[in-house]
Length: 332
Ligand code: BT5
Image (tube, protein in one colour):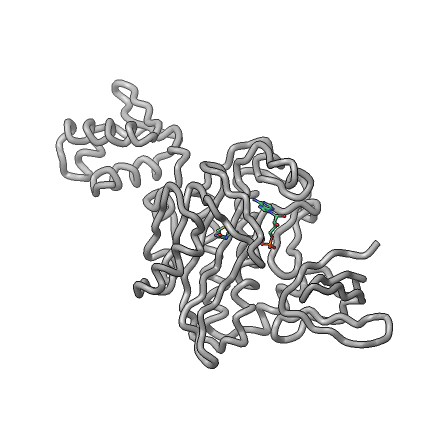
C-alpha cells in the first residue's frame, strides 16, 4: 500500500462514524483533491468501503475482510513485536515459514500470517484445521535472551496474552455471555465451554545454554460458521459464539499488543509473576486428571505447577510425576 493511501486511511480511521471533507484531507496531506479522489478509488478497489456525500466528505464504513499488515499496524502499540509483519494468501504452515525466515536472519518480533494453511500443524504432527479467510493463523518469531529451560514460558506468555486479548475483544464486540466460560487448559489451549477456540504450538531452536530462536504459532478460530464433523464437538469460533463477524485484523492487533506486555515480563525474567498469573487461570490444582504423555496414561491429582511450568501430579500410590507436555483430561 502506498504512503498516501495509508495516510488517508489513518485520517478516516480517526474520524470513524463521521465525515471528513476532501478539502480537509487534501490540506492535511498537502496534495490536490483530485489526488485524494484517486486514492479513495484505489482504497475502494482494495475492499475498503468508503462512503462519500456531497458537501460532507468521506467516511470509512467498513474495512476489507482480509488480513493486512497495514490495518494491523494502524492501531498497534508495540516496540518489539510486529515491527515486521508478513501476510501470505496461502502457506503450508506459518510456523514453517517463520523458521525459514529465522534461518534467513529475520529479527525477533517478526510476525507471519496466512489467510489459509494447507498443512497447519498442532503438537505431535496433529493437523490444525486452517481454512481460508476465517481464522487468525499466525506465528511469532522471537529471539529471547533466556535460558532454554525456560522455553515453556513462551507458551505461558502466549496463553496469557490470548486470554487477555479475548477479554479485550469482548469489550468491543460483546462475544461471551459469561467470562467464566473461557479458560486456559494446560498446556496450550484456550477453551470456551470445553471447546477449543485457540491453540498454541511453540517450537524451539536452541543450543544447550542459548535459544537461537523460537517460533510461537497461534491459531484463533474467528469467523468459521462450522467445522468438519470430527471437530464439531471440540472446536468453536468467535462467530459461532457471538453470531457476529469479528475483524481478524482487530484480533491480531489486540493479541500482538497484549503479547508484548507479557513477553517483556519474560525478557525481564519475571518468571514468578507469569507463573502465578498462569496458575491462577489454569484452575487445575487439586483436580483429578489423566495425562497422556509418552504413549502412556498417568492418573492422579494435580498437586502443583512447578516453577518451571511443569504439571505435577500425585498418583494413587503416592508417586509424583512431572510433565512438560501432554494431553490432559479431567476424570469424572
Ligand atoms: C494445538 O495443537 O492446539 C496447536 C495449534 C497451533 C496452530 C497454529 S496456527 C499457526 C501456526 N502454524 C501452524 O502450523 N500451527 C500453528 P494440539 O494441542 O496438538 O491440538 C491439535 C488438535 O486440535 C487436533 O488433533 C484436533 O483435534 C484439534 N483441532 C484441529 N484444528 C482445530 C481448530 N481449527 N480449532 C480447534 N481445534 C482444532
